[in-house]
Structure formats: C-alpha cells, structure tokens
Amino acid sequence: MLKPVSLIIPFKSDKSEKEKLFTLLRGIPNWKEVSNEIIIINTDQKQLSFPSDIELFIKQHNINFCIFHQEGLYPGQARNIGIYNASNSLLAFLDTSTHPSNDWLSNGLHIINTNNYEGVWGKTYYQAKNFLPKIFRASTYGEKPIQTLPGSILHKSVFKKCGLFIESTRAGEDTDFMSRAKLHNVNICESEIFLNYDKLDKISFKEIIKKWYRNYFHAASMPYLRAHKDIYFYGISFLAIIIAYNWNRVFDPTGIENDFFIPNVTKISILIIFLAYLFLRGVVLPIRKGTPLKFVFPLNFIFISLMSFFLDLTKTIAFGYSKFFRT
Image (spheres, rainbow, N blue to C red):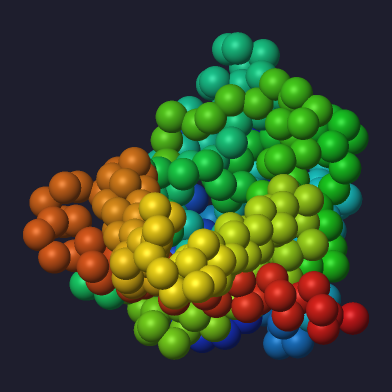
C-alpha cells in the first residue's frame, strides 16, 4: 500500500554501493507500506541507471521516482536537495548501508499517526561477525541499536523549526541536526524497529583509523561535540603525569625524605592512569553499550582498550589538526 512519504537516499556511485542501492530498492516491494516517492541524490560524476525489474516495479505502482545528479556533495547537502524537492510533508531517510525490515516504514508511520508525534528517530544495529569488527564495535557503537538519522521519519515542519543539515562538512551533520532537534524540544520519539548496518566486516584497521580521522576532522567544529572537553581530558592527564614526575622534587628539594615524599610516584601515577583507562574503555563502556561479558572477558578487554586508545589518539589528532591547521 502506497503512503504519502518521500524516501530520501544519498548515494555515491561505486560498484559495491550501487549493488547495495539496488538491493535496497528491490526490497521495497516486500514492505508492508511503501512510500509513493523515492528521491535519490547521486553525488558521483557517473550517471546512474537502474535494472529493468526496479524500473518495472516503480512504473507499475506509479511511484514518483526522482534522481538528482550533482557531483561532490557532502551528505548534508545531498539530503537538503531531497528535502527541497520532496512533494510530501513526511520525509523518510535511508542510506545504502542500512537495511530496513519490511515493517520499518509502517511501524514508524503508525507511531507518528497514533501519538501525533512530529517524527520518529531511526535506530541502527551494527552487525559484526569477524574478530576485528567485533572489537571495533565494542570500542565504539556497542551491541545495542543506537539512535541514527537513517531510519528516521520526520515531518517537513521539523526542518522549519531546526533548520536544514549543515552542508559544509563530510561527517557529523546528522548528529548535529538531531542535537538541534533536541534543543528545540521537537516532539520526536525513538523507533521500535532498527536497521541493520553491514559494512563493519568489510573494513580493515587502516580504513577504520582513516575513517575515524576523517569524520572527527570534519565534525570538530560542530557544537554538539564540544571538542575542548576531550582536549581537556588529555591535557589534564598529561598535566597529572608532569606533576607526578616533579612531586618529590617540589616537596623534597633538599633530597631528604619527609612526610610528603612518595617513592616511585611517577611509576605509580602512570600505572593508575593506565589501569583506569583500561577499566573504563575496556570494560565499563563496552558493557554499558551492550557488549556481553563473555566477549569482554577473559582477554578481549585488552584488545578493546588498545582499539579505544588508537581511536582516541586519532580523534585527538583530528581535533588538534582541525583547530590549528584547517582553513
């Protein structure tokens, strides 16, 4: 059954992403309710053509199928083009790496119509089968579905209240928008249905680090991140080590031990910081995000902590480089 919803999908053309887009579109006939408008924004220079079975389904169901070709757009600008050109008051957002269930759209519309909400936020579960992706997931997203823009269904009026997506950044524009919606007290609830994200198993450690650097370099200026909090954290940790290193020199300038003298204070301080980081990043945060105890222990917490360290280091470098060298 067709519903007056405009489905907006940004797309950057390459072979693998094209197949994912076709898979997504081929799944739409199985949905309980189908959007009567599909808007695809192709941000690659290559023109996009579709297999005959997809074109036939669109024609048979009289779906308004729009494709906009504009090279080099960031995701926010691509989504804004979809919003500008949507003919419906309800907008749904997906991307090619998030796969909805057959009742995703019908469930979201039911929630909105029944409770008079202005929208429903999407939720995404990050799939991982291999060891490295599981460690990465435990260090970042966790195993609980998290709130995401993909999977969201929103009234156009929400964008009049909060503004459109920021167009000048490669990453973070979606979280920035969700933060603004919360700031404006927009009446949006969380979906009961989650999407599945399937790209983690196909990413290497090098690609993870590159993606983390790229995302946080571009998102560093976003208000929601408040990057200085992270910088303060690392700055305070560094300061604590410096103070610890000079503690005995300050309180024992004569070289005679007194009540303030602490033997091996530098080693003790570094060990305390190390153990605290290991416990927080390797145990506490992964468990809070849904990682099972049986995966964290007996040894994986060490690998999770190492992955977290490299990600935190990459994030700090990205913040610092963006602050001092980005033009």
